[in-house]
Image 1: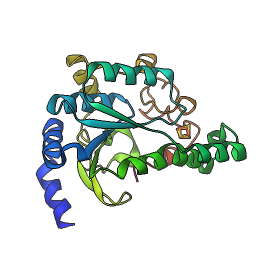
Image 2: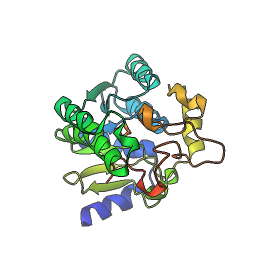
Image 3: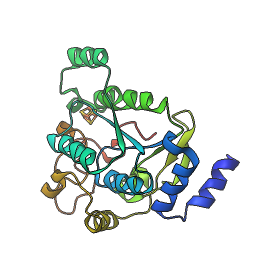
Image 4: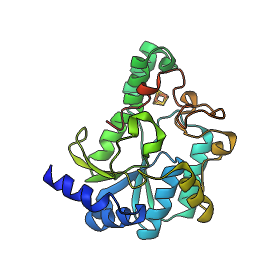
Length: 232
Ligand code: SF4
């Protein structure tokens, strides 16, 4: 506990770039960005690639992603020399789940939606964690009522106490898009069609003006349920 308090004091006021530099100096390729190719993750990818050209980032291919996200994966591979690792769900688990509950089970209840997120995201994420000491995330306080108390570094108690870094915790949506434009960072083209937060294709819709950033994710559920289990 003392250790994490010390690191929080040290890093809380640091810039996102400084936190990335510190984490790479500290852990090398044992700290990796978990990218969903969100606008935030693209900012972090660009920052990481500028610090370490051969850095490793990873993503979870749930099997239900929009085509625009796969197109962006390709763009990232072409633009940056960093290594992209892709983790997939367990085939047997997906076969069993869909045979029992159908392919669109997530619309039927919060419980079944979480079951799908667990099989397609949480379990592959746990495999990704087997070889790292820390992960970098694009979470921001502004994104949701579940993220207001976000710190820039924590021990991830739900994942063997590895370090979890949130370098963009205090960035605004405007900060993100200013960085993307200024640095010509590739981004998911669904953002141009009013998709603000992008996840799996069947669980994401565009956002209407005045709605919350994450209103288009699992829009049929109450706001306090809108986490997929990756961020415990
Ligand atoms: Fe399944 Fe939807 Fe979660 Fe993707 S976001 S893993 S499709 S419930």
